[in-house]
Image (cartoon, rainbow, N blue to C red):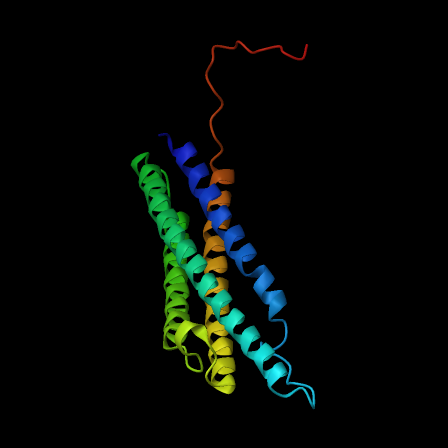
Length: 197
């Protein structure tokens, strides 16, 4: 595979990863636009309102587990993009071209991925302890459940931001390199197709 096709694959992969990370958490950001705490029951609503709150907390917990799984897949794709980027850099260097800017961007990408993985692991730990939740994700303590959801949401957001920034950094470096090193024109002996003429 030539380096231009490999570079395009890396650029497309990183771009898709950034979009996936953005879309994956977009609806969740709207759903938790406030501090993630459901409203307190209205006076006189008693157990009925408490049951609705518990159900909201349970569903929020399940959504965060889904987001955690989605983010794990994005982190895996990000690792694959790093491998493809390294292959591209190796091919550029093998041709004797300067790849120092790409190497710097890839190093930054890997550092940001490590930060994303760390925040992701923090969220996974919070959700696995499931303070305030019992078997089958049932709420056992509302205040602890709220704190679990808020802490996990913050960690997931930190991971998402780091992942997004990592992708943006690498994508911009790849784009700049490609603009500075345009693909050579094909050598077809001067014959061209006159389809529109």
